[in-house]
Image (cartoon, rainbow, N blue to C red; front, top):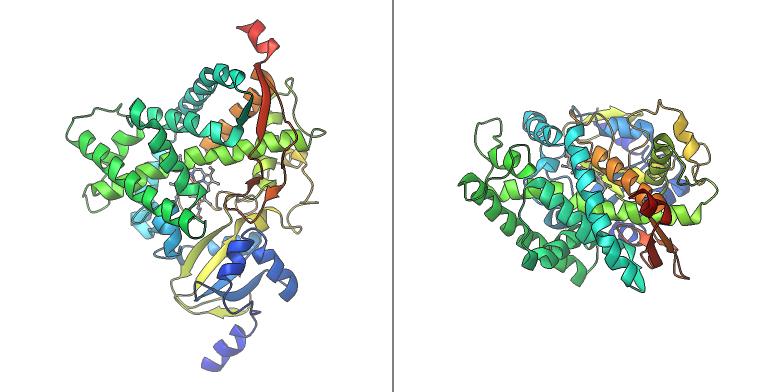
Length: 428
Ligand code: HEM
């Protein structure tokens, strides 16, 4: 028996001994680079010295999301949990505990509530537009942060007093923008998490003690009242982690909106126009989510020995599924390197093919519950850029920096000569 395990383990090609630095330098290209050297869609290496099987592709994604095989408990590396996701939240839960916590997120994000968030976001963008028209230049990525932070806090029932707006927004941005930075940047993200959790733990206590009465359907009210399967309320710190799981990624949608503006400028032949209908806008949004890198990979740990593709894996092995490599896998996508929104005229993609926000079934597995929010906010942003404002992109660095996580154009999209569009002024 032992012999067969050894033999089958030898079927996995070995990558470099420890790939932490290689991964951090080229997070979106690392798995593809090693796979093209070793052949196939799977290899083993070490990340932060821990043995890790790296995977890409639809079949690998399906295997990765099999809950009988995989656990999430402690799977993400500590630096990610200390900044981006926090500790004790839904991302690291398994089984019944995960399902119950996940249900809470899904219940917060009904179609009606998602539209309400989209409306707030659009209103705040329009309110900000006159200030942009007075600036000689606006760095679009940075200008989106206060709009998204104010919209999502208001929607979630979280008070954001004027004197705290700048620092709370800056901390929310540090959590996703500097989580993967090396040195001081990463340290700043850790500090931002401590401050943000302390702030929101106080807000949770205020809601429980009725010093604050948020609307019943708001994220704050629902998370403050949530009970795990043992009947206990979440501790204020864990409730704060879950509230941050709503606020932080909504502000992170600024990355996708910046990439939308990049795509509009870079691929005019396939970009929608002010006359485009909703389904055309939707296809462009999907293609941007497929084509551009954002969240590089997700991690899990095998809960038992199992065999897959003739390879036997031991319990406790870490697995890393490359999301971007799957979204651009030539076995799945025709000419994946070409921006072609029309590929989304076909509607029967499996739940493991387009996975920029994870794969599988959202209510049963760890797939992101915020996809509807992202689609809503991106579609509205596209309409704003096409129909509500006019602007120019001056000469700037438009190259996507793939060594950065999240990847962004070098200049983060500089806009000039911003004006309210004539057409929209006539309509109002
Ligand atoms: C900004 C764009 C976003 C990206 C790229 C993104 C990406 C992801 C990814 C890759 C995962 C992990 C999936 C897995 O572990 O299998 C995830 C999980 C999650 N996301 Fe998002 N997300 C985004 C926006 C949002 C929004 C707007 C929300 C909430 C309003 C949200 C809430 C969550 C939560 C709560 C989880 C944990 C789910 C679980 O473990 O069951 N995300 N997201």
